[in-house]
Image (cartoon, rainbow, N blue to C red; front, top):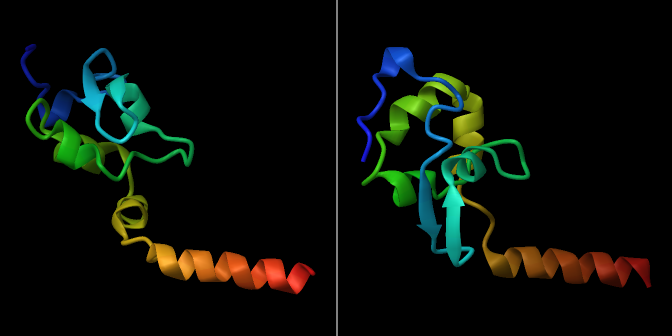
Length: 94
């Protein structure tokens, strides 16, 4: 494993060549995928998945604002709540 980058020498693309098996998707992915998902922010599981290979916290703090970090780490609504909302919207459209 290559030596980790020091916090003062981090670049956004610095870890992009490293890959890891994604338990959510079921195959290997590069760090680039984890640092920028479809939302434009990092994957909420990046700390869980990468903590053994990279010191992820300094990277995230260097390239994302506190508001972005909190938005990603904020607990999502329970599935039942989401399903009930979808059902209510479907009823309203009838």
